[in-house]
Structure formats: structure tokens, C-alpha cells
Length: 323
Image (cartoon, rainbow, N blue to C red; front, side, top):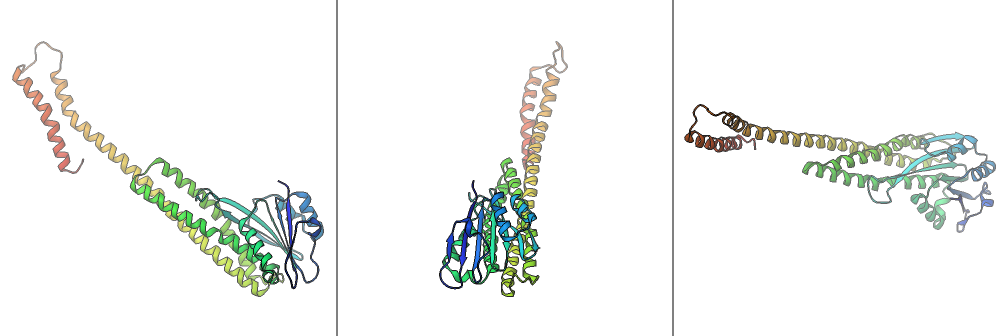
């Protein structure tokens, strides 16, 4: 997939201008806030941006190799940030797709780099293009809008996880099956994957809310504090879901053990019922010509005993609550 680069210019007055030309991917003129978005990044395009904006080679290397840890770093006259988000295109809690977003924040520009389309970012792009007043509040506010949209996209996923977890709990308590165990482990992998990146992401926004960097105004830092609060709520929700999932696993193991015990109990009772019958038929079924107590009356008594003993044992077991 070829790299796609688009540029959004927000002038001091008038409408925004959107172009898709690499010639415009330069530092903006005075008074203009410029947002450059690069999708499906490649090395030549990143090198072009690095030469024009003076990006450090380490940040370019991070953009080329995804799966970076959420972080915030300062390089001279710009900040470099890596954040993560998730989407659920199929509407199933175990089918979560991660997204990684790299951002360069300068005094009058914002450069975002991502490998795949990110729906929250596209939504903010369209919103800012239609409302230039948002962009005139500065590139730091644009970064807040994007970050807030990416973070808030996790709340619907948490709702899906809660609904899926409730279904698993009901299925396990009703009748535990082997398929429930596969669903538990699948959901557990989703929770681990989300928690692995969203928990350290809180530190990034904590720094943006407190550090007092000249590229982040005091007014915007309050908004980043709100993003930090959202991430804290998401982390708490993930921890609660993980605890509930552990309870579901314990319930599954308990139900499976109880069912195994029930089967073993019934097999034991059946063995107890047939044990005296085995003794009687084995004793009187000996292949000898002359047996003691040999008579027709004894034969009928043996048959009656074979019928009465199991019946009496079944009645006894039922009254004892063993069946």
C-alpha cells in the first residue's frame, strides 16, 4: 500500500485548506497552523519529512517499526509521542484490532503518522476541516482532540467485553462446556493486550498535563488531564473485567469438577447395586454337578433375591439423597 499524505492548513481567518501534495509538507508560514497526516508510512516519505522539519533519526526509526511502547520524548523544538488505540470492526469482543499512532508536536504544526486507517483520527480531521476555530486554538489542541477520540474509542469495546463476560458467566453457571473455556482464554488475551499498552499510556498524558512544556499551553494541559482521567477509568474497567474473568474461570473449573464428581458418584452407586448380584450369580453359577442346598426352591429364592436387593438399594439411595 503506497504512502498517503495529506495536509490541513488552518489560517488565522477564513476556511481551512486541504491538499494532498508532498510539496506542502513543510513547516507552515507564520500565523498558519498546519496538520500533516501520513498513512502507510514508508522510508522515503519519512525521510522527506525529517529533512524538512529536522526530525531526529531515532523518531523516524520508531515510525518505521511499529509495536512501540507508549511514550513521550522531547527532541529540541518538538515533542514526539506514541499512543495506542483499539477498534472492534466485527463487533465481537475477542476480535480487537490495535492501532499505533505517532505524533510530532511543534509550536505551529502537528504531524501524525500511522500504518492503518484510524477512524477517530479521520473523524477529527473532518471536524477540524469544517470548524477552523478548533485548529486556531493551536496544534496542541489538535493533538488533544485526536488523543481524546482515540482513547474514548475504547469505551464501547469495554461495553462489548462486559456483555461478552456476562454471557460467559451465564453459560458457565447454566452448563459448563469446553467451548466456554476457549471463550474465556480468548477474552483474557484481549484484556491482556489492551492493558499492556493502555496502562503505561496514562503516564504519557500525565506528563502532558503537568510538565508545563512551552508547546503545550496551560489551557490545553487541562484537557490532557481529562484524557488521563479517561485512561484511568479504562484501566480500572480492564482490571475489573480481568477479576470477573478469573471468577468465571474458577466457576468453570468448579462446575466441571462437580460434574465429574456427580458422574463418579453415579458410577459408584451402580457398582454398589451390582456387587451383590455379581456375588450371587457367581456363587450359584459354579459349574459343579453337586452343589450344597441344590433345590428348585433355592433357585427361585436366588432369583427373587437378585430382584429385591437392587430394588431395596435404589430405594435406600434415593431416600439418602444420593441419586
